[in-house]
Image (cartoon, rainbow, N blue to C red; front, side, top):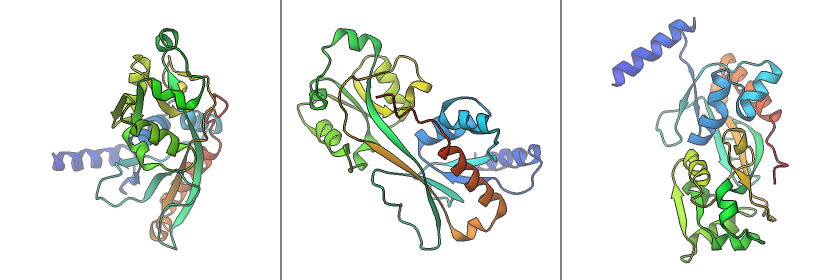
Length: 238
């Protein structure tokens, strides 16, 4: 299987007309699925896909790596809940890409069949859907959310994939937390009409100084930064 994957990658380089290896980029599943892949495939979908289309910019083809892979990456996209840059070598190139707000959503039928909460704390009276990775976020209002889903009296559905959060919400399994841009991908997501603590995911991009010397990697770094900075994150949804 490894040999077949290497051969397939070689064929892709030939089709692309380039003999150099693809730029490798490490990121979470949600960033790869909802933000980067649509833009890579030329789709007018999601904040980055639409940003690329509006600005008529094409992202160089990249090979996307999972966060837990041991393989080294040319570029890394990292979530932080605080406004502090991720830990890197002093010479690394680091830049914030976006402050992305997270808010609770419910499905259409769920909103009709259940008494809506009047306060954020009353979400605990409902079934809650959460991405398990949220437990790694502690700043701003994340502590309130994580305390709520850690309460033994709360009914919590924890999932490993961001797409599963949206499916559970649409299926009216409970109220779940997603980025404000999520309705751009999935119909049937409705913001909960309640005052919500400020919960942000700060997305950062980093690259080693050595990798940044490569003009192709440097260009890719710059393009990603531009597209993220000009994206519409629908912060007014709430």
